[in-house]
Image (cartoon, rainbow, N blue to C red; front, side, top):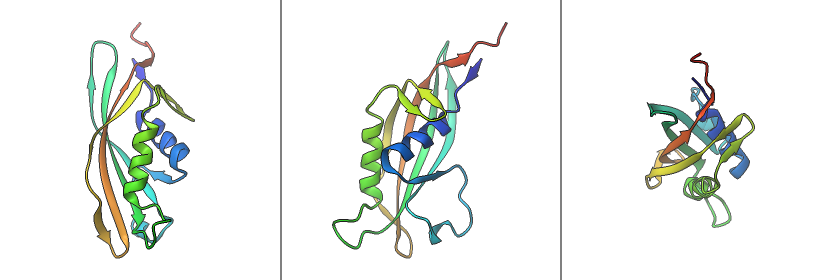
Length: 133
């Protein structure tokens, strides 16, 4: 069976909901900008009888807000969680049935004026084709 690239769908959905860039792999010096940035990666996959649950890690890096008008990593994490309330979760590259935040850690200082919030999500999706025949 062939499944949707759930990481890419989640990346698309994050960008659509927040306007921030995403990456599968962080490059050296990424904290120099542009920020904010969401690092989205696959942690594990559990295939059921038909659908699949992917555990996806999402880390949001942002400049620590200097004023109440600026959105930091926590505010962006809240926006992402809100975007996942809509089902199915749709991105430019496809869709998944559901994305649910399993954990969201508090904001942590990362480096200089950069902060980070780490989240994990369970993404449930069905195969896009049955190529077992």
